Length: 342
Image 1 (cartoon, rainbow, N blue to C red):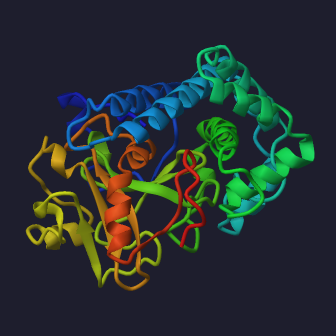
Image 2 (image 1 turned 135 degrees about the horizontal axis):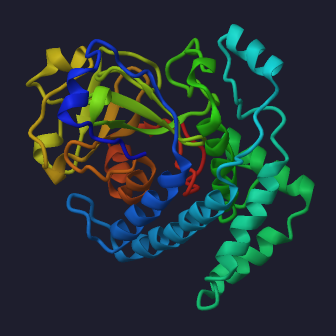
């Protein structure tokens, strides 16, 4: 999600005590920007994130998939995807439940989105035999198989889906849910009992991001892996178990190997002032010694165009290093099936 920078006149008019608790997605720009980010990451054009040749080819393929998401979303705007009826959303709202839940009955439109994404990819697959084979296998799934695969993707189940199929099915689900979330009046989305799940759809975050611009300046948001909504969580707090006592930050340089001690008091209040435009500090892993899990945290202050999902995918070397320290990944990335999460 790209945040608009405010002009000086607008800044004075802001209520600087108000923290935007929820940032709803803008799918019309989200997927186009994400596809471009993935292409740049695949080409190794992003400082601070090194992508080897093997991963580069996969990231490039995922850029094509995300571009297909962007193309399909463009055809569906502004009509979007129908929201649940008002009574259903009212009950969810009153009981602090996700208003667009990832569990339960899915909107039938998601299968049309899935077919449209495959159609878009097919036009670009002539020189990619593996993609041709994958599209044929994906089109051969009957409705029951497809819905079962969607259950596996949304539940992050280790069984019930071919890992090679998962990103394509996830892409259709993401496009569907982000379109619905973008139509939502944010007052429908009540905070859940736990702050670790998306208040819009109840899914896990893929990573977190420190945003810049407007009232979001300097605040940390968790980025939903399904609907792409973002919700505020203070820094130095585990996004898995919500502990605040044994948090550390692991990075690929010595400077990021441990929790940044300077500004720790400010960090516990939700903000931290860092030297901007340092590409070595864009990506870190936030580890917790209470639950022994981690999620990555990305800093838009150091790279304005950072995308939590794209940059998470491209920084697998950080996953390897942190897992070697004994931490388990708290949740997966929809564009890569690595097995079951913690």
